[in-house]
Structure formats: structure tokens, C-alpha cells
Length: 155
Image (cartoon, helix red, strand yellow):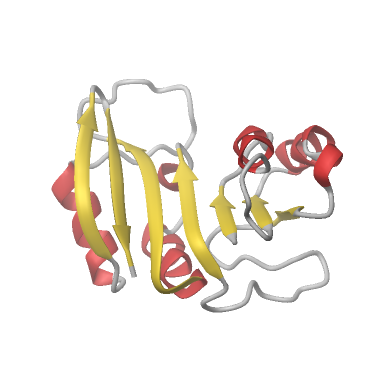
């Protein structure tokens, strides 16, 4: 099972459907992004579900929370930095992962100079790591990729 926090238009979920995941769940707060993701991923509706909700407290449209420990993998690619409450969003990663589950996040670092978003938090790799470990996650590697950090780890 894979959870994509901040799935945007669903392109990653569509790509991930080529692999043997039993289910693929996308979460995005934008109704426009959710509509795009649902349209983009409609070819594999049986395994891909998109929830239009916040990553800080993800629930489906009927108000049911995403199950604790339900995911083998959680990703957030270019989305976590837009969260209103980053520590709460990171707790979602921790709560959603099963023990031994893996995460991958891609976030801007201190070199990021783009100012095209109303909310865009930048931090050093060490600062991102502190937030992740404070939530109980284990960081395996932080790879600086120009003005972004790729961070991988597990629960």
C-alpha cells in the first residue's frame, strides 16, 4: 500500500499503478488537484483512491480517517513544505506507516529562492531531519539535490 501526501494531479499514482501495490491512496487539499487526479487516474480506479483533504488530518469524503499503520510506503514529493502545520503532517507520515514502512519526501532546502507560492517553507536538511525524528521516524539519508532535499527513512 502506498500513500501520496500532496498528490497533486495524480501523475505519481498513475505511474505507481504499474507496480504491484494493492492500493494507492492520494491526498490533496486542492479540489482542483483532486479533480485532475481523479480524471488522470480513472483508468485504474480499483486500486487508486484520491481524498480531497489536508495532509495534517487526512480523512475521506465521509469523514473516515486514514487507518493507522495501513501503509508500507508514504511519499510527499514537493508538497510537505506547503503544509500549514508541518509537524502535524509529519505525524501523519508516522501514523500512516506500518512498523518497518518506508517514506520518501522531497522538500526545498535553504537554497530555494522561488517565491511563487503563498506558503512555502524552506529548511536545511538537518532542520527537516529534526522534524522527522521528533515524530518518531528514522532518517536513513538526506541527499541535497540543488535547491531541494530528498529524504528517505522508515518507521
